[in-house]
Length: 195
Image 1 (tube, helix red, strand yellow):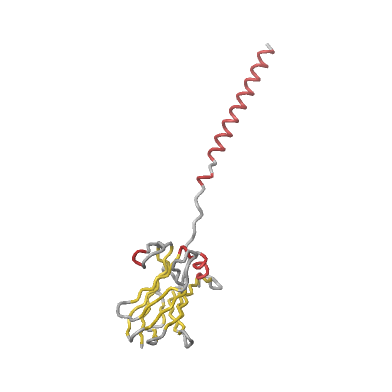
Image 2 (image 1 turned 135 degrees about the vertical axis):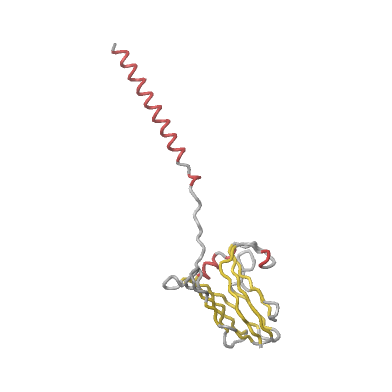
C-alpha cells in the first residue's frame, strides 16, 4: 500500500512540474516586446516666427514677425509690420528664428529644426506681383534645401505677398511646395513693398 502512495506522489510532482512549465511558457510568450508601441515624436509648438532681412554690405535690417501666443485659441496671429519696405536692387541675407513662447524662458525651436534638417524645409512663396527672388543658403546633411537661412533680392519697384512655410517630413529633393508633401508646421504671409 505504501508503494502505491509513493508512486502517486511522484506522478503528482510530475504533473505539478509540467503545469508550472506550461504556465511559465504562456507568461513568457505573452510578454512579447514587439507589442511595445514606437515612441511618439511630438510636434514642435511654434508660437513665433521672426524673419530678419539684413542688407548685404550693411544697413538697417527689416524684421518680419508673426506671433500667435494662444495657438488654436480665438485670437488671430499678430503679424508685424503691416507692410515691410525693401529697397530695389538690394540683396538681403535672411535668417528665420522660431520660438515657443509658451515656455519660460522661450524655447528656440530653430535649433531642433536644424538638428532634424532632413525632416524639415522652409519654402518661400513670392506673390506674382512682387519682383523678388530667393535663394537657399542653408542645407541638410544630404545637401538638400533647409532654408533657415537664405538670400532675397529685391528687384524693380513693386508690391505683393511673401509667404514662408515650414514643412515637416517633406519629400526631398523637391521642386517646391507643390510636390513637397509633408505637414505644415507654420506658415505666415507678409505684405512687402519694394521701392
